[in-house]
Length: 498
Ligand code: GBH
Image (tube, rainbow, N blue to C red; front, side):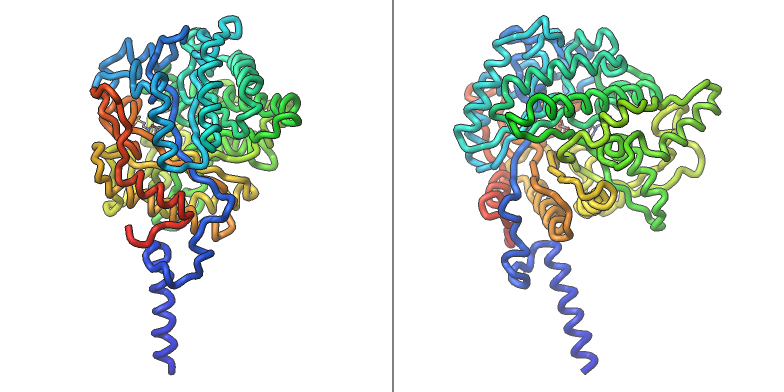
């Protein structure tokens, strides 16, 4: 009797295990294996990575144009986005791929320098506005919803001349640009993302200085950037609420990127530390009940700053007006998830001082069995996505989450089985999280077509489609992963047999 029960229990456990791998589809009811009806699937891109036409129709230079032109040596294959996939002149090719995939939405970004070539309203460029108007109309005419990222790293170069995100003038400049977008496109666009990945904008751009504008001011410039960027985001949300929401009825959010931290010794304090320094510094000001930067950061950075002989903290503090403007300033949390790490508190201070890394004081490591992509930072850790979604559910009052990016890099082969596996396991992680009560409403794959991968040029491919950049037609050719994703989208399930 007893052994039968044990065998039964083992049987159930084994089936549960296979459910998480999405292989034993017959065990559970159809419903628990299907995404909810209103869950939507899409694909994401960004302007500089695909558009090309870097100076067409009055477009002004962005910090990426100037950086790639002046520092060819910093880009792995010495390439740039001058032509890229030439999506600016070939949007129909992208549209054809979008239709083939059957996506519910297309997330793309607008190049600020097409709308305002020098960043300021005085340079308003009707041709740029016409271009995106036409694109939005075409997307909608094909039954696809446009999701717009207002800023995906291509700051107008003229704005960087006065300090970019380290100058609080950025708040007013961004707000004016955002208003232009709401006014021109808001009748048809109902999902707005202000900024893509402030972590990369601020830490890489103004802290470590490996991304343009390549300001090397660790632990100072990065924090100033976060501070001003959050104010620009908050002000934009308030503008939409007061002037556009009643008529247009859309949603405004921001896209944050983070790893999930695992602890080998189940040390929750270490996990919380990394999550606050990676996600909390942006999510706490916006999504927590109290607002402002996370307590742990305020305390650490104050303490370290005084120890360094400064008169006050390197981390700016929101005054009451800005704390309340930023707090609650999003209808959803856009999440870019790629990878995770094991984390532990550093035994000895091992980062330069001052720096965000020194303030965070966390060492990270990876597991030998985690599969690595072409990108050296990218390991496949689907359980990190599930853990992260549950963390957000518990920490930020189950705010609506839109997964705005998730993707895998390789050499660009059409038989991209590792990408198929990556997507399969991560989409399964999303389904598990949804079944655990996480308020996730959409999933977007990065990216439509192999494109300009920033410092790696065209050497790391993330696309569902491949393109021969030397060919005349620049046709987008589906990889196995495109066919896999198309199947997920059309069936709302994760296929058992791939
Ligand atoms: C996303 O960032 C971006 O939104 C997207 O544009 C990009 O193409 C995609 O990921 C793939 O990278 O080693 O110093 O060069 C994800 C976060 C930011 C992680 C840059 C890797 C490399 C830093 N990525 N980071 S560095």
